[in-house]
Length: 150
Image 1: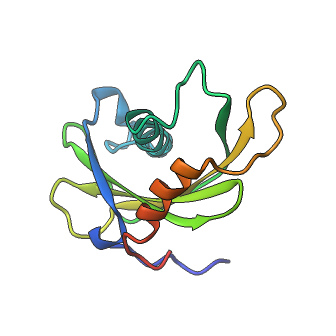
Image 2: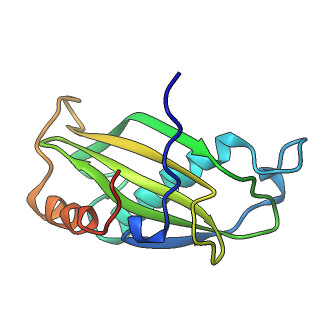
C-alpha cells in the first residue's frame, strides 16, 4: 500500500481558477463525486492552454494527450460551494509535462483534493511524440518555479 500524499497548501500552485460546483456534481452521499475532480483537472489545464494561445482545439498541429491522472482526497466538497483549482508543474520533460493540481474550498489554505495530470505532446496527424514547443516550455517553466515539492 502506498504512503498517503502530503496535503499541499496554496504556495504549491502558480495560479488559481474559481470553478462553480453544479447541482449534478453531488452524488447520493451529498458530496461532489470523484469523477468531477478529474473534469476540473482537465478544464483548468486546457483553459490555461487555450487562454495563453498554446492550444487551438480544432487546429493545433501539436496537442497534449492525457496519459495519466491521479487524485487524493482529503475532505468532501459539495454543491453549492465554489472551488478554487490551483495549477502548477511538477515535472517537465522533453515531450511531456506533469501538472500538479489542487482543489481548494474558497479561501481554504490546504487542498481538499490534489492530483497529477500528465500530457504527452504529439503531432496531431501522426500521433507520435514531439518536443514541447519553446514558447509553451517557457510558460510551463514559470509554473514549475511556483513552489511545492511535488
